[in-house]
Length: 113
Length: 111
Image (tube, rainbow over all chains, first blue to last red; front, side):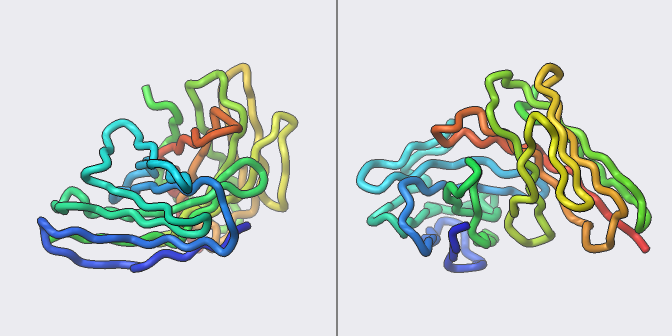
């Protein structure tokens, strides 16, 4: 499976500010995914990031709030914009692996005050 | 109705016990099925895939019933280290990005 790293691993932010989360993969992948896991909840897909095209957002998520970059086949960023306490969550990136399923990065724990 | 439903638990069991988790899914077109394990403050990690014929990996057995749209995970001889949340995951589209996660079942194995 791919080795995935995320930065930062955690952060505490003030409301109204923005945070950019980085995801780095040790191999080239076509698709990268960003998920959110709110406290006590399961994972919800935010968007799919393809290199060379705009990200595809799931229902309830918009580009203005969660802009995504995908400059190359090993890297992506997710920005959480104009944060509010409701954005406090774990944000995870993932990639497809063998066996038709996904492998996850270690996650970024975000607390918005 | 949720697309993938699990009993959230927690299941509190003693060491050595056998415990079973169930999961139901609503999309009959679902193609692939998985169990993930998520430890506290960690990312989900693939535990095992679930095949139509059923599959076993050591103390873990997964089964799929397509007719009933039902998946199960059986853990035998529970260890303290099995304490975690177990996520049922369904892929409705092998070619795309259609993983759907259940809410997870929390297991606590006690001495």
